[in-house]
Amino acid sequence: MSYPSPVPVIDDSTLPELVPMTVALDLMEQAFGYHAQSKLLAPPRLRSEMQSGDLMFTCGAILDEQGQLGFRVYDLKQVSSPLRSEITPLFSSKNGQLEGLCVGPFLGAWRTGAIGGVIQKYLTSIQSGKMAIIGTGYQARTQLLAAAAALPLTKVEIYGRTRTRAENFLSEMQEFLAKQGTKIAKINLASSIQSAVHGADLVVTATKSEEPILEPNWLTEHVHVHNVGPKFKEAHEIPLEFISSCATTVTDSLQQTKSYDSFLLNGTAEANRLQEFSQLLQTANRTSNPRGYWSSLQQQRSYCCSIGLAGSELFIAREAIRAMREKQNG
Figure (cartoon, rainbow, N blue to C red):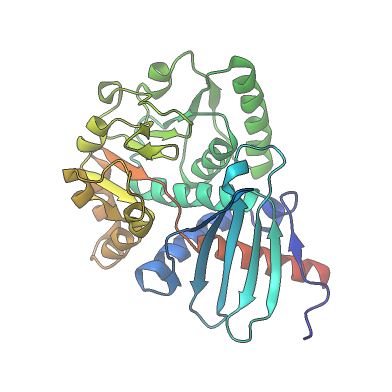
């Protein structure tokens, strides 16, 4: 068996350069379009539990002229380990050849951030220009970079439980945003969650909290809340009361939500209202006035349950592989 030599291997240090966030946003919008047309196959995650580890597979297939399939896998048991990694091989669906490999946890976070940026672009009404981000971890970083690339933000307020960590996060994000070429007039730390979300057009929650971290009456009547952290009955960072107050509730993967027995909305009226964003995007694009369609939704509260559209990372992986080959070939 002959393979392209060498097989491109992309790690966390090269991925952002090969696929900048602005490009990742376009790729995730393409992924949503493919998903709505059944050209992206996105089954629920597969879990293989063993005594020494717990492998989680996110699989997918892109059904276009290029034709690829692949998966991302990591050890769920070690998800909090600073040394953990992930691998994402990309195969040709025409001949089974390995086209390239992404190594490291950054790809998953990069696509999750970009997915958020696309959804936020369409559902956020920019009135104050303010974004609040609750959490200072890995996911919070890519969520902020994506939102800043997708929306004309003028102010960002960050809240983290640990002041030192929050200060480090602020410093790092100012540097990353500058490298990305994104200018935000004000970006600072908030003294509390209530202060951070006050008057915000967009609120992103990316914590590990097992209890609700905000009150519905703290939020504006047009706010979009993007829930990245826990979303289960026994552990959730967003109160059900807020979700019930939203006119629009979406997720990037209904199949994935339905695979969880303890999903927060199971058995509630809100479960029946939850829409798949890819279908909402397709509906808007089929109207005579897509901009007006989104504008009407933006006037009321909205909520996104970010759960991970399987296979979407393959769009970023194949672009990274293409860009690396182009770079190698001069």
